[in-house]
Length: 113
Length: 116
Image (cartoon, rainbow over all chains, first blue to last red; front, side, top):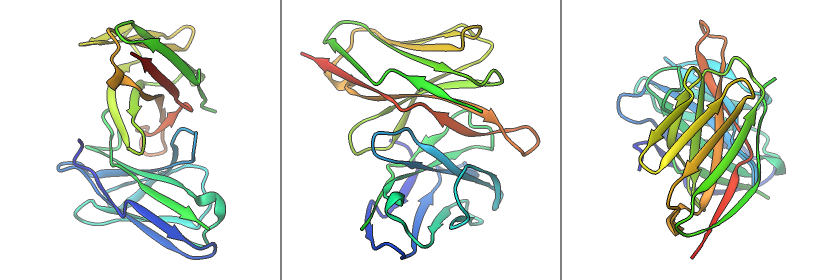
């Protein structure tokens, strides 16, 4: 089991609402990446945070935003939720931007109804 | 752009070897990975290989890389029922931060079923 923890584990939201997901990185890791995994698909990269700044972004609209805090924990915020946002959201931490060994949390299962 | 392809299903008998295959398109890939995902769980890093290597062995796991054909495989020796899971191949792509690799690109995963 990795030291990456995510909360909550499950969440149900209504279309149009906003959601905040949280991630605590593994001890000693200063970089956090977020991925979206739709049912039956591989994880898709959303963005990465390093030293409290966004370090790279995948093909996700601006309503997906994030933060990283001085203790390296991170939040993923999604505004104006759509049904297609229903997915498993995974957080991964690494000791730096180079993803030589990325350790994933257990994920947050978001259901949008 | 980057793309990673995997066969979707593999079924083996307990005790046999499993071979999961993956192809990728990004010739600048530097690291290639295998992750395991059990039902309802996150991803577990199994092993990874640097692109200048041909092979890496780690206990029951053997990774083979054919860089010319952009083909990666994972062999699991003496497959057990506990190995039943989805296996993802992934590669790192260059980023916009001083050339650092910053994201993993995953395939859709191969569901391995191990029959007793």
